[in-house]
Image (cartoon, rainbow, N blue to C red; front, side, top):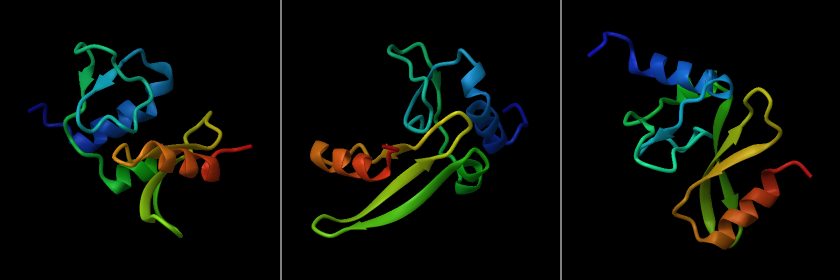
Length: 106
């Protein structure tokens, strides 16, 4: 509607997140750190492309776990972050903890 590319808007929102007070909600806000607790947040209703994620320091990788199979994880290498990971929320809690232990800085 505004004529601005959706991916450019998402890239700018993600890039400026550390200095912005904007809180997000919606189906595609999992890569954002500042999530709204109520229905008042800015709705992210467009999927982010791999290119947009890479431009913002988010690297998607597929890992193989011996007993549970393959997982898709997102390494967050954004400015000011140590080792962060965004894990598929559909995984059981125990699997999430296992992946976090593998990818976080000790």
